[in-house]
Image (tube, rainbow, N blue to C red; front, side, top):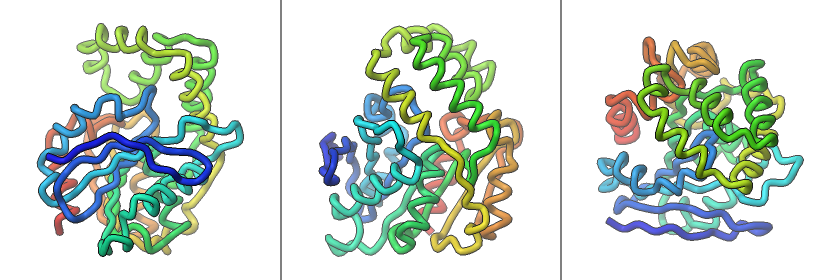
Amino acid sequence: MNSKIDYVDIGDTKLRYLMFGEGEIPLVIIPGLSLVSVIETAEVLMDAFQDFTSRYTIYLIDRREDVPDDFTINDFALDELKAIKALGLKGEMGIDKLYVFATSLGGMITLHMAFMQPNTINKAVIASSTCRLTDSLQNFANNLSDLADQGKKWELVKYMGDMVYTEEYMKENENAFKMFADSMTDANLEHFSKVCKSIKPFDLSSKMRRLPIELFVVGATKDALFGDEETKLIQSKTGCKSYIYQGSCHSFYDLEGDFRPMLLDFLNK
């Protein structure tokens, strides 16, 4: 299987990206908030999406390393669109389709992308996300940035884990999470804090009915950040396809075994 990690120049900076797969349709993965780059676990990601690689070539485009103090989700969306253009993922290489899979913060970025350049994305699957800044999300982002600024690595990892995973999962993997916390660098903490601070007030809910992409939104009733209300809000505004996991948590996309087959089925139709 073809794979590489490289950088793409978007003008004022370069973004690192992971590419793998053999398919003719580009599938861009836009991850949620992460303590370190998802590219650091490239082998895990490639294994998880191995069933996608015959039909799709997958691109995970990282967020910029040099995050300005006044950056916003809209700015991250513009970075992503510039990278898609620079990589020639739609139009320039005879490809007229571009699909996106996004989680949490990545879903918010994807919605901004859809309104900024409405003809770029054909299909998108958005998991555990929102079209507006909720009080719980703002509190979450503020708490995370405070812990990162204070250098409280274990407290940061545990707080974030408790919010996005189940209690059982956290207990089963506590030692691994502690080792991960110990491995975080000051640069990791600084970058993470700046990304958290980019989560500023926004509300796209009034525009949702005009969303120009084929959309599938997925949520979970036990999501500590959003419950299932935000997924239902997007669905009610757009009439898009939706699914709610009963009793699952924010990170159901990592834990529920039937999620990726459901994702692949939607993309393939």
